[in-house]
Length: 308
Image (tube, rainbow, N blue to C red):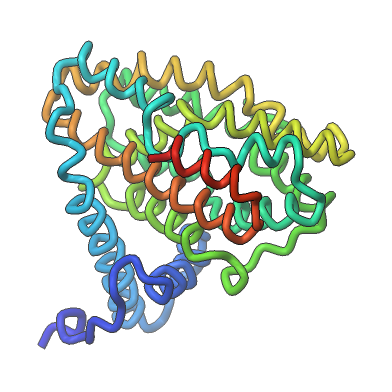
């Protein structure tokens, strides 16, 4: 009997229990390690993990299917649709971010950033996984993006280390146990997309929409941190991405997404799926954050109206 197929389905896809279990299984997933003696047991565990990944993504694909009915598949039409997500995509214009910039206390900002750091899947590693086997033009663009993430060869310029500086200055302690499951779901989704070649184009869409929509959000977080007295070094990650991601988005759309859709129109819907998955995950995070942070009712109302 196949041990994977005989494993009971103990989790409901999308539940808090499912995402905490998957997040725990993902700890160290990309870390180098030595061969295990019991490789058959290791393979069983890996198969269970990959099954959870696919169940998660397929559930989201079913949920998003009605939103994809009118997505164009020609390059010009698709790029107009995709770039329109900056203004019209799920979660855009959420009132959370102006509130963080203007009103959040240090305690509230620390809680928010703890959730965000815990839900960070590592953009550099996601790009590295996604570029495998791509055609030369999109592969080169992902390589340029990765090189920027790596500080163009300078350790002090690595983006992940800049975020670590924020964690140190604010004394954040991100843990799976204290992270809302919506943030874990976002990280689980991004890692699942990048880890399976069947979801390569969804991953390109998800990563591309991060570059497209992040600048406004990180700018507001940077403003809030500056208002609260955080040092330039502690804010550097957010200050940098407020501008850099605009250029990254323009290049990603021009050099990666457009050429793929030009050559392979069928990929347009997959790219759209990935973009919408990422935005819907973000939208659910913002809604949960507003509840946990006890934002004023009028701010919550504006955020939900804009996000709808």
